[in-house]
Length: 529
Image 1 (cartoon, rainbow, N blue to C red):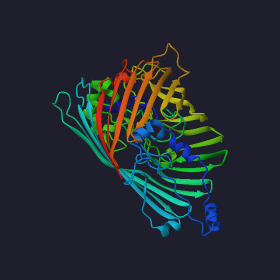
Image 2 (image 1 turned 180 degrees about the vertical axis):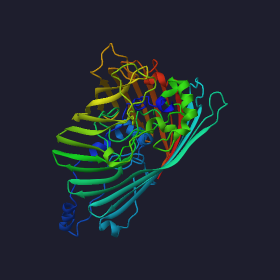
Image 3 (image 1 turned 60 degrees about the vertical axis):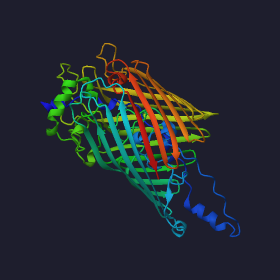
Image 4 (image 1 turned 45 degrees about the horizontal axis):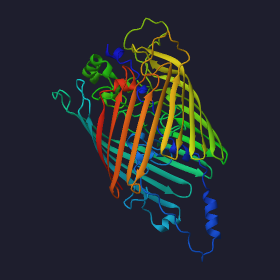
């Protein structure tokens, strides 16, 4: 019976906002040939003094600088594109200036071999501001230790490896009769080897590849699975998980492209129970039943709380791989891309209540279905304003009705907006499901014509030591909203203290309505080296 109960739930639709595209542009920049640089050094006069190095950039906190266009909250943005781990990107070194610390000697650097190492320890305490539901957490403590190393093993070969240790403690609960719960573990994040031949490159290993141009929500960012374990973030970012893949790319001055192969299937990650951020808060009886029986249901990740995302997932076989391609053109102040991807819809088709509709999907084993999509994205710079746009059409996607019945429909996801002087950002994003009419059962979390608007203000003061970010997300269709704020201060080199809060509200079965009891404030300490 439990197996039928588990075949339901639109979990992956809960956080439709997706992260920034700073790494995407970097992946398509033309690369300087090592041969040309060597020839320039050979022809320079030995008496000529070496050019002065430009002053390093001022350090900045990635949560606040990158929210969301300059890098995003590393805990929530997840991992990098090919430019490095975003969990560690933008972190000041012990000198407070460089993002990495060279460890190789000058002689080995001259031979083209170098190494860098950086890391960060972050701990934060969340206080629930509206714990008015049974079994709800009041306090949560999260700690993360991230490390990353970049190696250059010659003029054409480089490698990157990064990892994380985490410890997450939740409780006590509202009735104080429950027990505190803890999640902990060690994760390998990036482990990738890169080969470069002038403007061509080949990247093999575990990594993150982000497609799309928009900041809050990028419909084309679908290659890596999403990490929902920490819930919604005040910077509106959604983290993704690194997975094994092969990426071959060519970047010319005005055109280029890349091919991607993901050999295995990897599901989203998120907690089904023992978390305030599960969608099953709308069905407390079902939540209690699943929690009691979960020990008998295997989860791909080995964590029972994640079984709704990963139970009955396709096996680790090459036939379950995914493939995609991307082509781009660019000119002075503009770029445009075409994206094609054949992979998996990571929203499982699970049946909660037997349906009498003959057109409803039939359960034939694995709840995961294939998905083919075509998308376009681009950006343009006009004076102090950067315009961005994204759109993707999926032949079939999994949705759920308000009665928790799964449906498969074609859908067009879109987003567009602008950024002004890196301080103000406004973006619209939404979805259109052309196959559904007003007479059909309404969808949960989204609508057949669904639109949101998001606004962000960010600035820095006191020589960039004090940083402020304010955000607002409003659901135009469903009239739900999220307000967030973060203030961070560098108390000394490598040491940052931040405070913030997030408040949600809205009607039932909207994003703000489901989590309206999850308002929280937090204090956070970060040490970067």
